[in-house]
Image (cartoon, rainbow over all chains, first blue to last red; front, side, top):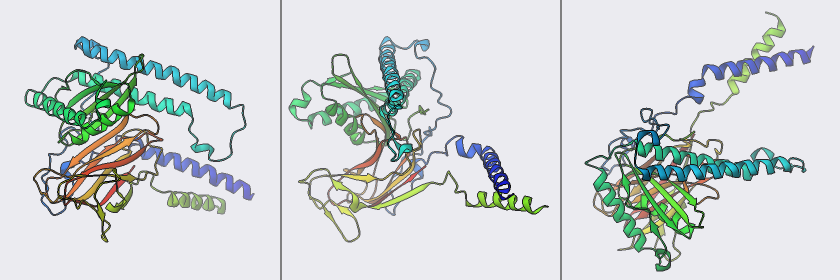
Length: 251
Length: 160
């Protein structure tokens, strides 16, 4: 009798929770809340000069990432960049599959009792890397869809190049040696792209962090480090225009 | 209404009442004194107000500020909804300014998941960073350059 009541309560609770979740699905899993633009930031009494709010919020609903950059007829250079990134994605997919199969083998082994739910294995890390590489494919595609802004592209590329020069000059001579720049910064209308290659991934990682920090405008940035067949490491940095976010390339 | 039905309804009501709102933001605040200089030889001080200050007359102080996360489930955008940093820039609107970058890092890769940079334009200012993407196993930190006479009073962040 009592167990019957408990069963009904449990079933009813599940039904109610599912129904409630369905009712509030938009709030729970729908579009993220609007971006809190920097221009709306609280000002601490000093009359801080505020940049305009994001004209393109970070969840850029109107900035759809195109399906195919090649179809838009952009330069061979952009197509090559995409080819490299897609090759990296394929490599990561293979790595993920290998690690998942290794994980299945490990299922036969005794599982540690502690914190099983939070345990993350090599397959999870490979999946994270794959997700990030896919974001970069979408960023490349987005950049390819942008046109150059006559008033911003040139000055932004110059400022970016000067910032890179400063960052390079601060590196030890042995780190500067062997560093290859992947051409001039590529700035379009809301986005810039920079590329470096070096034997040491730490040098690439350091530059990828210093440049957006010292750039002199409010920006959002993302970087990817790709290991080349010759063992060198290429870092790709995307930074947004002042007052803009990056396009939404998340899953 | 039968007793059984009444008990079932009350059970359901209590289940709803105790359910926490799953979308509530999780704000955390730290004093500026939690920030650490990135160089062992850097000139810096901390005071009774919990600030970290750059007492140097000429050198910029670089500090890194830890950002604790407790939501590791949100892998995609807006893992950190917003973050603010209350700072004092002795130069006011003139350069050099306090510049800070919120970094979202991977646990292993040297790539950056996401970053946001802001800088001061006045004496007492609030730097802000919004909509940071997170990696499920990654971590966050804020890197700042403080010109002479400047300080960081506090910083805060809202996780999804």
